[in-house]
Length: 615
Image (tube, rainbow, N blue to C red; front, side):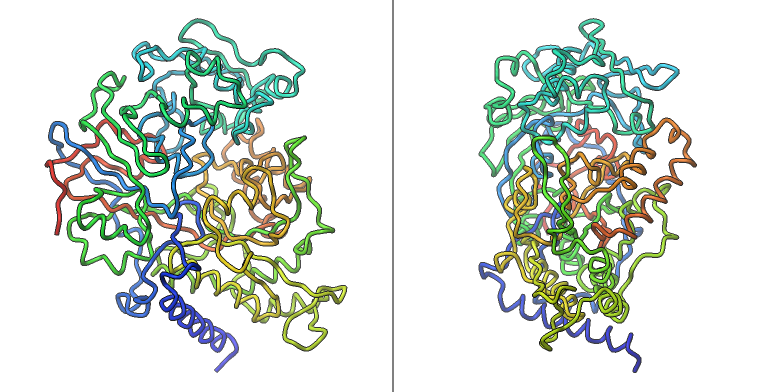
């Protein structure tokens, strides 16, 4: 038996051991629930892993993304928000920072510009637009029939006000990087100007925006398209807006449903907005409630919820035949899971990454590269997710068919290669305990932050730890446990407060509809939790949104080069690409998960009968 075969057998044996241990520990404080959009795993009954459909492997291409039908008049839809924690309750697009709150907001507010299936702005949204010949000036006209839920018209001033708030130095949200392409925003933010030069209110419904340079990103997600009702927020200090009642207790928007009531962190009741600009919604009301990952199946089966935004893919084999009252919609998700390496902190004063490789335990690129070679993500995708996740290669996922470069050679499971790299880089086992010391002969122990996620998260984190130990790298869970969702992102750096105890972490991103990765890996964005940056990375990111990148072939070449460069530098490495499964009760019609990336017309969503279908 060759080395590769032996390693594969050992891997499977190790996974089985972890799954048995997870089954024995279910219900303990160490096992938790998961966040499927920005988590490291999804909940499952780990004890049944070895019995799952005889190891059946699924193909996401076999699932339909759409459920059509003719709805009845009225009715209520019960929507489940799958979470292992309460939602934060920052219910405004200008201030929220996590996917939970986004799911709540999506029902009552929306962007002013429409987006098509290619993620390009259309003329079908609440505002239309014109662009000058140079491509750096846009004139937007808000439709007359677009009103806030309190009946006040949505104005150009509301749109400009939203950008002014985000650019204000007292703004405590994470969207500043989304508006810096507008002329004068940085000067306004730095107190060098009293207004934003690139914003011009033409009349009540018309706003002109001037950008620093033309870029293809401006047409596909590069414009801030959410207004903020000035008549409500103008008397609230900017620093207090995100915690105000206007955001947390009585939020309003322009969408097809209005917020009727909120049970903080737990549920929201919406009623239809009869004045919705597209037309009156089919549904009378929507009830959103938080559902723990381990009870999703039961909630769907009993009809407690009609649907959830995303179903834990590792649970699907267990429910494929039993959940006869729902239809599973599916597609390739625009997300990936990754391992990140902490190499600095966030400079709050200057709003940028402050890299410090000298004081980072993982500052050596060869150490990072070896850790990538040490893990088998193909087997992880098959064993934990039955093929509904699969080995990831670059930081531009396969969701972006045009830009993802699958020709780039990336590290795949090869522990012999990992050992060779570590040997050559000077990581030696000095004291003979099987664990390598760093090149200075000092003890090397890496703290690993990984998010709680039901019974899968624990064995998955354990697998990575054991895989690294197999090549002599000592890795321990931060605080000896998995970290709850909100605590995880706070400590990894969501507020710029990087926990100095974190050396590596496992996270996930739902990427934007624009391929531009600057918002995650640029030097001036807080979401770059690795705190790694260099001139070449910045150059390539800037080239990707340059005027020259208006040429598609040029942009493809730039992003191919960037993908390859990130593989070489390894500030992070992607582990698996992800699929999205959406279970929908058979009474629900007109839900298209493809439109969740463009424009899902929730006013058309309906039900065919008063009560949910049950088995």
